[in-house]
Length: 330
Image (tube, rainbow, N blue to C red; front, side, top):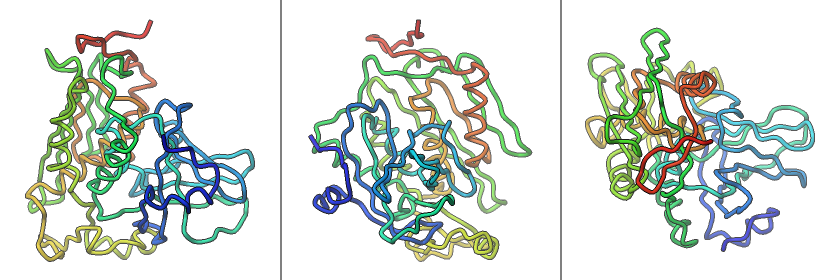
């Protein structure tokens, strides 16, 4: 079993367990490592600074912000807090692969100055997709002989229809289709003008996720993040996208793809927005049995819908029993 990291010396000694890369918004380099933690049910993010530990569960209740990425607040015993940005690509891969019972350690490769101010960490953007996160998590699972839990898995079930509208954005949660009591169905539609109208779908049966994992790895996870040439000045003014480059993001200029080679597949933009949605809804902390439909979505809309669905009782808590049916918590 991989031991839990208690200090930065352990991290330096076990480089084979580490993935590194630049943060797309901060432009700084970050180091990430997964370690087994039997005291944690789901995923716990943490960092260590000034001989102190700051952490957050992967939960919508610890949101910091949703401006161009999803961010969580890492808290410790003192007043110093850290914002951990761009967790959505990692969480999408982790959710589909059923990763749980782990600590995810994040560290900036640069030094930080102690202060009471909010300070920023970020998960690496890597190639702009979830593909490398899939590989990284799978390597950890194989090394630790960790398998996706099926029987007795904690889940939420959509038991009545819910819809959140914000202008042209619409997020809908619908009960599962007949005979799909152990499935989550995602769909995503984007519309950035006549040249960029796309759709993508993905479904996973939590009682038998192997085929879905393969499908996600081949058709959804490789989709890269993207932005428009016309947005660059505004992003720069807001201190965002400092680490963006053509090797980790698609740049669109009108109806033209600036990157050499163009899109990886015809619906890559919608597929990437689907990655974002899966990662954001993973902050529920467990699979959501039912249908999640996203039209012109975004991080803020996804997470507002999740929050309202939980608080209003649209999602009910329970388990998948041995027949793959939902059993409510007593």
